[in-house]
Image 1 (cartoon, rainbow, N blue to C red):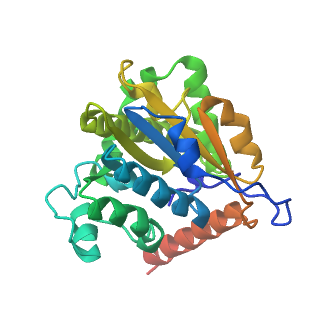
Image 2: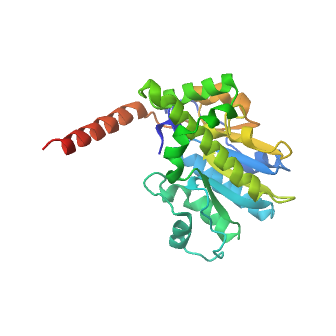
Image 3: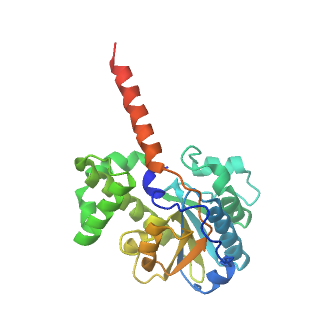
Length: 276
């Protein structure tokens, strides 16, 4: 899971309790919509619970055209499976990466869609396109100068400001290409009178920088920010979403410390391989 997706999104656990959220009631205020973006913090279980509630609510109304996921690659789909498919069959169809995205976190929402006969679609950029994407300077032009700079800063901050300068632009292209891939997937899945629901990290839902920027203008797109407590970074970008759904604060975790430790371990492993 990318560090970018979770940095800056935790707050003290002792923060005052928030009012109970009514996801179904809030959802109704957004309908009708061709596409709804539900932007999560990946490590907050409450956000995954809300995802399941939203999937079930749309399915009950027969309003869900498809469930699209950042957590699976573009081209993978459950469309050929029936409502009684097993979790193993669903994971195989989506080529699920359990290391990056724990299946237990997302299975309730995914299987709710499958049981309702709704196709689940991988929407993220496939890994075999990453190397080519990093060299594709044409992606830079998809954002305005100010937006590109903002995205580059976000990518750098998301990697604890440890990326070498010459890697920031290539890594930003990957972020842009991921947004484009998700936009392509959900645009193709739209159906008259129904809604495509996209589950992804909140940063992808920013209207200035993310998936909405790459969607056809005629589509009715609504965006939801799931915000853990009073997360400072999410608050800063909340004006780029149609609704903010606050949830209780997440425990504090130092993702940069973990990231630095992983980099050190990788460097040590690479060094040991070179030594005779």
